Image (tube, rainbow, N blue to C red):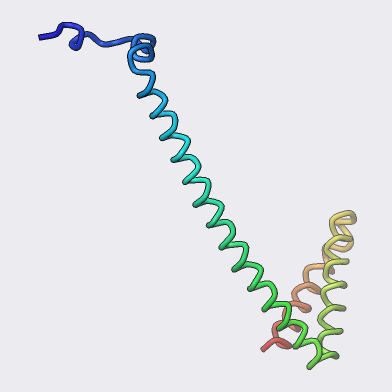
Length: 117
């Protein structure tokens, strides 16, 4: 029996004895990394394509709705603008406008919900 095989080898001894094995291991790691990168890239590309498609569909629906209901669209935009203005204004003058902002935003939300039903 060979006694050298029973002793653990240091990394330096392994590298000196098996340079081809280390090179093969490194190449294997690089290939696995490239494969994982390719899979991740494909997954991101698929998600991007699906998201782009959904955004385009939603935009087309919103555009169609605004052409069919111009009055409601103007009122909704006005309500959103007033609501955002009150919310942004409430953050700087909290004491006075906080009493009005919440009820107005709630009322505008209720109106918007009724319009979309």
